[in-house]
Length: 168
Figure 1: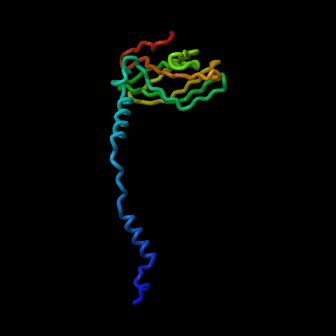
Figure 2: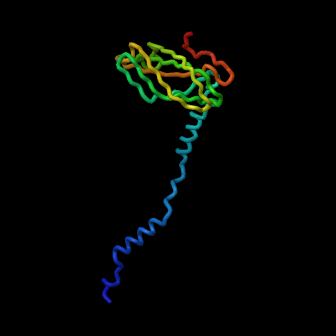
Figure 3: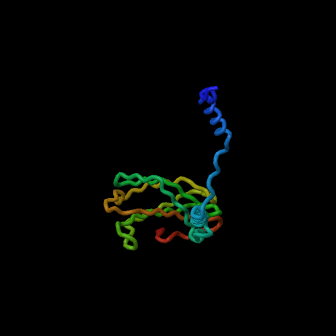
């Protein structure tokens, strides 16, 4: 018998190989190494809620900015507002501050805009945040920065005093 007659056709080999691959289970993901576990622990510490950040005393809420548009006079800010506390929040005070170009402790607010928003946020809930602000500093010619802070007016059954810098 010739050696060429003993060969298995290439198509049959590919078919067998394909069946073997299809019947194997996918590989398991690698176990998390120490740096991954440390990162997860750090994330829990940063975002676990009010017990680590003293949020309950001043009623501060978490603000996430997703969009900022300006035409030089008006600012349209979009984002999310999150209640990190287990208690519900009624009413929100929003402080928007524009800073000059100073670095570190030299940065001073050149404009402060405050708004009261009548809303209810359950514990851990997130809602949309919309701010439409008119200011001559919207163009950012000075290269400044901004900061948005949000504070609860009422947490659970307790009234929260206005935040520092709030004018009645």
